[in-house]
Amino acid sequence: MKVHYFQRYHQKENVVTSNTMLMLSRFYEYNSEKFFSLINNLILKEDETPELTIELQQSKNGNESIPDAIISQPSFKIVIETKLNNHFEEDQLERHLKQFQDEDIKVILTLDPKHMKEEIKEKFDKYLNEFNEERMGKTPIKHINITFKDLIEAMEEIIEDNDFGIKSIIEDFKSYCLDEKLFPDSDKWLRAIVAGTTIQDNIDLDLYYDNANRGYSEHGYIGLYNQKSIKAIGKLKKIIQATNINNEFESKVIMGEEITQDEIRRIKEAMERSKKYRYNIGERLHNYFIVEKFIRTDFRKNSKNPIQKSKLFNLSKMLNQNKLPATEEIAKILDGKTWEEFE
Image 1: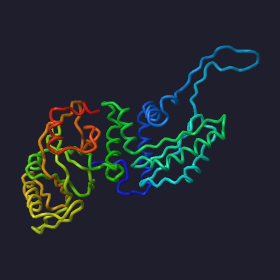
Image 2: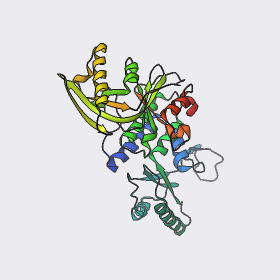
Image 3: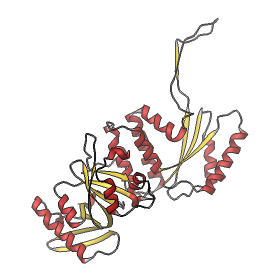
C-alpha cells in the first residue's frame, strides 16, 4: 500500500498551506543547502542569497574585544498567502506587510493554482512600491507570485537523481496537488503507473485498475510502466468504481459520462482475467481507469532505480505545446526517448 505524506481530499486553504509548509520543511530537513538554493532561485533571486558569511579576525585595537572569527547569516522573513481560486484581496495583502520588522530580506509570497490576476497584482505592487518609498532606509519588501506548479518545478530542478530521500516526498506532493486540482492543466499530465503481470490485460482491455481505497485523480493520461519503461500511454476517458460480488455487477461513475455496455464487458473481463493471478478483483471495490486506447511506446528511464508506484509528467511542458496532439503522436514523440532528455 502506498504511503502518503500529505493529507488528501481537503481543499481548505489552511490544509493546502499546511501541506505546502510540510513539503518545504521536509526539503529543509533533507538538505538545508539545497533548501536555501530553492529559496534563492524561486523567491529571493540571485542578488539576495542568504548565505553564511565567515570573517576571520583582522586586528585588535585598544580595549575593544574582537573575536577570532564571526560566522553570520542575513535574517529573512517570507510571509505566505495561499489561495485556491485566485481570490486575493488587496487590503488583506496590505495588512500582511505589518508582519515584517527589521529583517535583512523581506518577501511576501502569494501562492495559488494560477498566477495572480494582473489587475490585482498591479494594484498591490503599486501600493507596495509606495509603502517601500515611505520607509526609505529600510529594507524594501519584495512581492513574489508563484503557482504550485512553479514550486514543484523549482524543487525538481534542485534535486539530483541520487536524492532518493526526497524524491518520493516531492512525487507525493506533486500527486497531492493533482488530486486536489491545484494544477489548472491537470488534463495535460501523464501518470506513469507500475503495471506488472497485468500489463497485457491493460493494453487488451484499454483500462487500468487499482484498489478503490487508494483514491484517484483526474489526470489526463495514463502510462503503463514496466521494466523501467513506459510501454503504452492512453488518454483517460472516465473513472468507474465497480464490484461483481456473487455475480451481481454494481458500478458508479466517478469521472466522465455514463458507463457503456462495452465498458461493462471490459471491466467484467478484467475481473475474470484477475483470477488467473490468484486473486479476484471483482470481490473488492476497485477503480477502473478507462482510456480511449492504449498506444504502444518505449519511453525509458535510464537512471538506476525503478519507480515504486507512480510518477507524474507534465506533457505540455515536455512537448512545449499548450494544445497536445493526438495520443498516437505523443506516443510516437516519446518512443525511443529517455526520461532524462526531458529533465
